[in-house]
Length: 234
Length: 234
Image 1 (cartoon, rainbow over the protein chains, first blue to last red):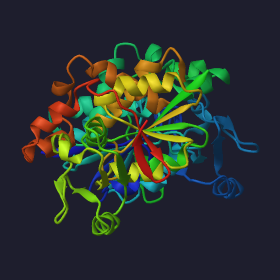
Image 2: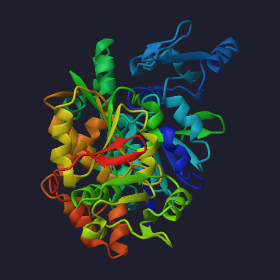
Image 3: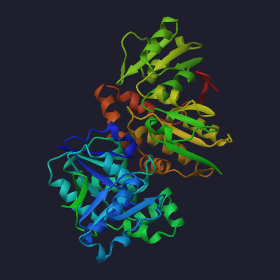
Image 4: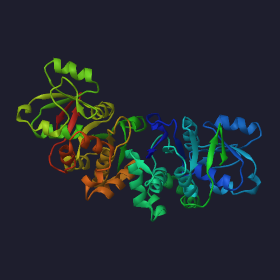
C-alpha cells in the first residue's frame, strides 16, 4: 500500500525522505492558493524563488514579479499575494516570478522529490485525484510560518489524508494529527480558523476576503507541477 | 495575560524563546512518565543526560543508570524505560542517571528556560496547578520521536493548554492544534492513541501495560524540576 506522510513545516523536511515520492507543497494563506488561481486564469509559468533579490533579478529580465514579506507586498514589485490579483486576463500566457515568506521556500526545499505539485483548498479535488492515480508515496509539505507549524496548512494536509485514506497508509503521527484537525474543522473551516495566528494577522491587514476565498474547496481543476525550476499547469 | 506555547518537537526549539519562561518537557511514552513515577516512589535525584556515554560514565561513578534506545533497554545498564521499573522501594533516596531516545535530549535542550519542569499525564494536575500559580509564560516542549512530531506528546500538551486556557492566552498555532487533538481524544485516549506510530512500536515490544499506565491522569502529586543539571522533586 502506498504511504502518505505530512511534514508540518519545511524546518523538519530533513527528517523526511522525499526521493521517489510526490511532494504536495501547501501554503493555504496564501501562496499556493494564488498559484492555483493564476494557472486557472491562464498564467503560463510561475518561477518560484526563495529570495527577494532573485525575484528582483527576474523582474529586471522582464518577467512580471510578485513578492510578499510578512503578508504585505514587497516594495517595487508588480503583484502582491492575494488570489484576487491573479484573476486578471492580462496575465494569460505570461510567466510570473514569485517569492513569498514561506511558500516559495517550501517549494525550493522540496526539489528532492520525484514530483512537486502545488496544493490548496481551491484545487484539492484535482490534487487528490492526481495522487490517487499516481504510483508514488506522498509527502504533504506544509509551508508553515517562519519555520513554525500553522493551522491552515495542517488543515489542508488533513483534508488530503482524509481524501486518500482508503488507498494510502497513514503511518506518520503528523499525518494522523492533521487528519484529526481536519475532522474537527471540516464542517465550518472559516469559524474554526478564526483563532489561528495567521488569520488574525490577515484580518488585521483587512484581508478577510482573501481568507474566505482561500478556504473554498474545489474551485479550480488545475494541478500545478514543478518542471525543472519552473511551475507549469499539468 | 500570560501566554502558553507548544513546541511540537525539540527540532523546532530554536524558534521558541525560552528565556524567562517555564518549559514543561514531556515524553509521555515513556521518559517523563518514568521520572514522575520515580519521584513519587522516593527517588531523590535524576540526572538526565543526552548521550549513552555520559550515562555510562555516571554508572561507573556509582550511580544507578537507566538507558533506553529505540524503546529498548540499552545493554549494560541497570534500568529500562518502563514506569513499573521505578515502583521499587530499593530506589528510595537514590540518584539515577537517565538517558532516553528523545526525552532526556528535550530536557537538556530546554535549559535556557527560567525553570524546566517534567510533565506527564500521571502528574498533569500538579503541573497545571504549578503553572497557574507561577507568574511566567509557558512553553510545553514535546520530546517527539527522533525529531518528528508525535501524537502522545501533542495530546499531553493539549491537555495542559486546556487546563490553563482561562488564565493563559493561546497564541501559537501549535498550541491550538494540540488543544484540538486533546479535545478530540479526551474521552478515550487509549482508543484514540491506538493508531499512533509509537504506540504500535510499543505494542510490538509487548509494552501494552506501559501505554495504558502512561495515559492515566493525575496519579501522582509531584512536580519534578531541574535544579542545575539535576532533577529534584519540588
